[in-house]
Length: 425
Image 1 (cartoon, rainbow, N blue to C red):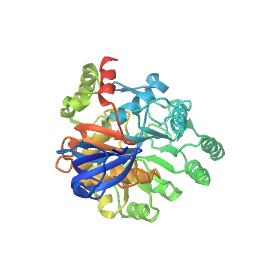
Image 2 (cartoon, helix red, strand yellow; image 1 turned 180 degrees about the vertical axis):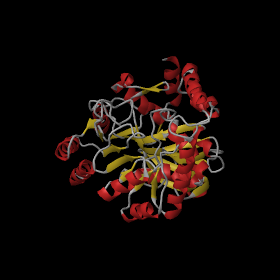
Image 3 (tube, rainbow, N blue to C red; image 1 turned 90 degrees about the vertical axis):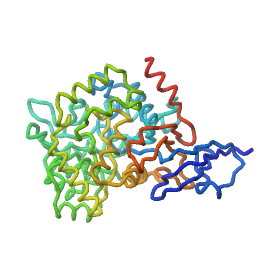
Image 4 (cartoon, rainbow, N blue to C red; image 1 turned 135 degrees about the vertical axis):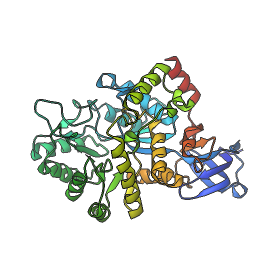
């Protein structure tokens, strides 16, 4: 018998294609054959997946890691251990790759990432970490800045173009995977970076070959950062879209992160799903339930009216052929580590995307954004990163939460061991 393993009998959602009664052949963590089971030949060990559906592992290029404990995001919880725990939680839920955007504290994420890439992390069953290091924001005299509420002291307050350029050069020396800045007044309560500063940030980052993601809120902010050369807008503009923005996005090939679920009125039903109870104790679930009830029918962030506008914007951008990219904005509010990615898939489908389109955004499209040609689809030569589901997400997108197994580089994630550790911890 060879050192190959044959996973056979499942429905495969490979990327653009759906294959019935198909097989995957894995050797050395790589997909060696993919196709109809009757056409695949191997004398390797056989694992039957009959009745299951297999999708590529999720790639999430936008979230914030290390701050959430239970259902609360706070700087007091941030640690290397918590960052690694979150990488375990992501793997548990079928996320192979995760990029933390701008909330690294004291280069903790950079150190974890570097250890992981050097093979010295000493942990298995973890998602691969990418990080933008510390992001850039304007100071607000006499108050905290407009960065994330849980990391306002961790982001960098830029005071001028030259100083901002120097900070970006420092990020480049640390080999960050991207540069992030915030351009958002938080409903008029915070100062915003001036154009002379964010233009300098973008120019300096590009001089070092770095991609720039801009957190924006309004339509005008989106247009401004695109004209300045930003590569990604990290949210849909919450004040709608127009033909001018669509033209700018397409002309400059700017990626738009979906970031829907964080503003979607969450309801309570998902809190009772077994997949959610796997990773949180009952008291934490009830705390989140109380927060949701207190705000209902509004979302935990912003308003239901703003969210309805986001749904219309998402569909308009998709129909116009804008470069949409999956983003769960994981790690705060109801965006629980690992589960948030599945809530984002549900939000995309509820807004009007097909389940197949949503899955592709969360896999192949997001991998492409990160420059990762070795993952994101179930094609020969790619990493054997895949999720085995009990049900078909093309009929019900919430089936992505009903996970039978996760394989990263061909190795089965010990979900039972992880779950036992969290429940007994």
